[in-house]
Image 1 (spheres, rainbow, N blue to C red):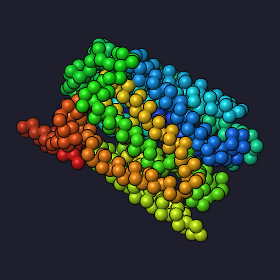
Image 2: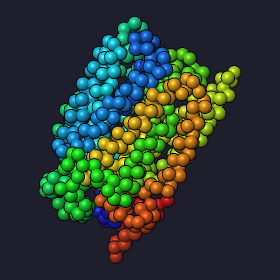
Image 3: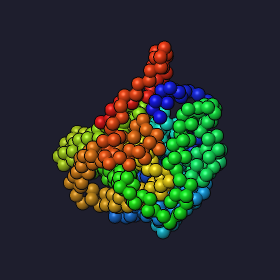
Amino acid sequence: MAELLLLEPPRFRSWNTFKLFACLFVTYLCSAQNGFDSNTFGGVSAMPNFKAQFGTNVASTNGFLAAIYVIGNVIGSFAAGPCADRWGRKPGMFIASAITLAGAIVQASAQKTRDLIAGRVVLGVGTVMLGPSAQSWAVEMAHPAWRGIMVGAYQSFVSTWVEYGLTYLKTGSSINWRFPMALQGLPAILVMIFVWFIPESPRWYVAQGENEKAREILIKYHGEGNPDSKIVALEMEEMLRSISTTGADKRWWDFRKLFNTRASRHRIWIVLTVGFFGQLDLPPTSYYFPLMVQTAGITSERSQLLCNALQTPIMMISTLAGLSIVERYGRRKLLMSSSAWMSISVAVIIACTATQAGHPAVGLTGIAFIYVFLVAFAFVWTPFQALYPTEVLATNSRAKGLALSGLWLNIVNFINTYAAPVGITNSAWRFYFLYLVVDFVGIFVIYFTFVETRGRSLEEMDRIFDDPHPVRASLAMQQVEVAVMGEAGAEGKGARATGISIRPGA
């Protein structure tokens, strides 16, 4: 595939590429449905009238109401994979968005704690069901030349500024927390409308035996409308060789494909460890940033919400900056570098939080390093949590693998979400040592077990995992040299235009 991308360089600024990004934006709105909750609930839980109505001024209550959303995630995980496999990626996104919209309505109109709990559970069911459909669609439709950018952008859209702005609304009304929660339904509505205007995944079509439909889509979006495109021909050849029309994805109950071979177990190990290290790296700041900055000495509600709201632009800019280099340095290098910076940041946060008493400047330094941590995390881990698991999973088991990932990720997230406010309240800075250990250990786990996926097609990953030493095989990528007699200069120019360079991994 790397050689063909050099011989047949795609045009990033073409009309078909623009249309592909427009289609991918629908899947980004699926991610936004989840991102809205994690950022919105953290802000509204710091508002006095919300605290008074639902008792979130008590750490255990705040942790329970935040974590009950994750219970919904766990429940929805069991239906997420079969839904995406049985009816397709598009219907899967529509069904999940409809459930999310229903949850947002119930949550925003809640009068009692039981109403809020019901809304958050339903919301959790819907958002977790989006992953296997939307992430699978994104990675299966992304052009192989820009898969890292196109899929990595999946988790780039979050919001926390609404609730901060509403603190300036001089009213005793509950509108200051109801409006942000109701706004969570907007991405769901947009997905339900626009999902019918995008094509179905070509790999899902191949899995159903509808090869010509798959070919037509690839010609339009990957081949610039050229039916003789070599890239499309190779993609179809690899898909027909690797994707089974009678695979486990046709049996909703059959999860054996995820564990029945050494290669499958290695794939699912990577998927689960990405979820573990991606969730248990720090307390979920989107929920508990106000509590964390309060621990560091900031007691003003508006200042806490401002600190919380600053996460959005900082993380979004960092994520987009990370996307610009994702195909240049590869997955392993970036993940290890990010984890190293995260470990350093947590160590500084611990030191500052432990010694801040009577030293405001030290407390502010600790807060500053929370943002440094968020930059390091968002630069790599935010896009890679969507990109990397979808890359390493095989097509016939991708939706179920992502569903299992969602189940595991939310079990870890539930523990972290429920335990964090209690741990921070009772143990203060000592609680952060847990995250320091996790972030540091993650560096070694990545080095010894994570494969390099840069420059490989999704089907080429099968050969890597079938090798007795997958990590070593993935790092054996050699410099791609294309030399056509008499046209070396022109081809070199074309290769540079694609921004693709394949070097030995690290």
